[in-house]
Image 1 (cartoon, helix red, strand yellow):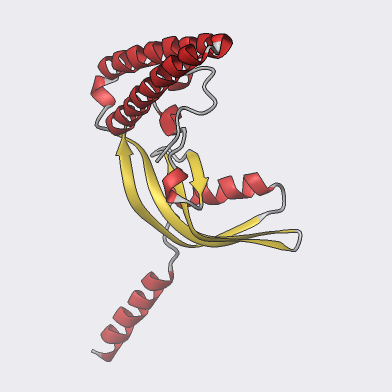
Image 2 (image 1 turned 60 degrees about the horizontal axis):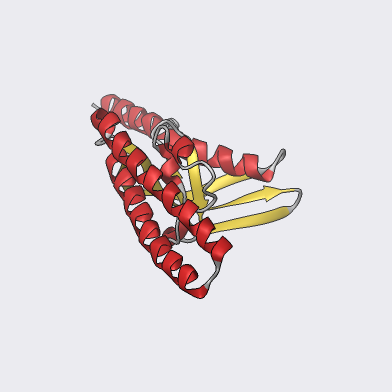
Length: 189
């Protein structure tokens, strides 16, 4: 009886000591931070928690809302520039409005084309804390956020959750080609 209990205790202790496989999303984040810092960087993430997920459909809808808002803003500015006699600025704004119309139409087409994957997760948001060292210098990451695709691509890292999703439309297949030339899609709230 004692041997059996001792054997069970030993097996339990041995099982507890085996290393668990590392989360692939965590590994992707550590690799991304190390790559950004360069050769010789060591990264240690101390806390890592999934806080949200976004589907392709949600991201597409968000991008549609951004361009709808941008179109309205550009139309108001066009009227202001026309009234003020700013001819070249008005022409530039008219070109921006035409581009916005093209993007809005393209997003509607994307929604039809991507129908089967609209419910799939485009990326997960994580909150993490940790540190990185390189050449004696230390970087502290306290309450940082990362957006990571299900296949492990880190698409955004930011200390501010409100700006984490800026320009994340690129996770939508074909989005970058559609919005070509837009450095910044629209002011984010």
